[in-house]
Length: 139
Length: 132
Image (cartoon, rainbow over all chains, first blue to last red; front, top):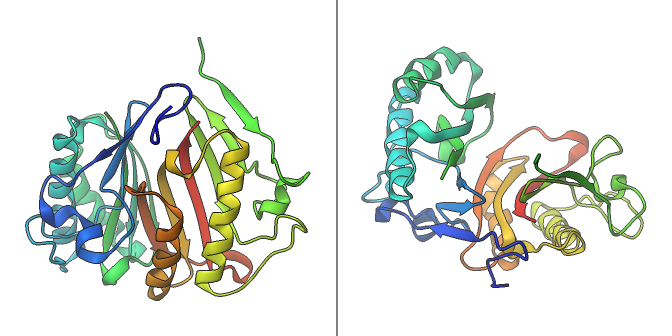
């Protein structure tokens, strides 16, 4: 049994940030890994509209923030050998339910066929962002 | 063969209510290779009473309880894959993060933090998924 392993032999594997900007621990001190692979799944930390190169916050409309998030998510998942086509479950946190239709419009562009299970709710998101995606994908 | 689904008995106190989960939920359920832990609130494990305090003190109590709970279920904090933290105000996120960083190993699990309206004056709720 190793530090990150388990008696059943299933391992927990850290997915590193594919680009420096996506390491929120380095940029903002958040005590979290970008993603963890375990048991055939990839668990992503809450995805935020952050510039993948610089780590700068990309505040904007819900639509523009969602585009940044999906681009980042694509980078992260593909670096781990997965993809947007392999999403299993998505929690979409938005700042106001009035934007629900706006979310759907942009969301559909990225998860076209056989979309994943999804729940949307309103929450307070860090730094005043308008959207955050909490994602589990098949590895 | 269907994957295993099993409620993991609360190890510390006779009822899961003492973990701040309430009588309607199990504190931990095993499904397949994973343990799913209910959203925990700050609770004294011996007496079962709620421990309201600051965001930092509630975070400390919850994670101390989580550590015991996972150990009793044969897992541990370094097998946690994902944590969801709900706090009463995102202004308190740094206070939570500072305490949180003392409990989880390096490299830490994936995590999502958001601000939400929590019941009964609770300041923090933490739920997680761990490898069994």
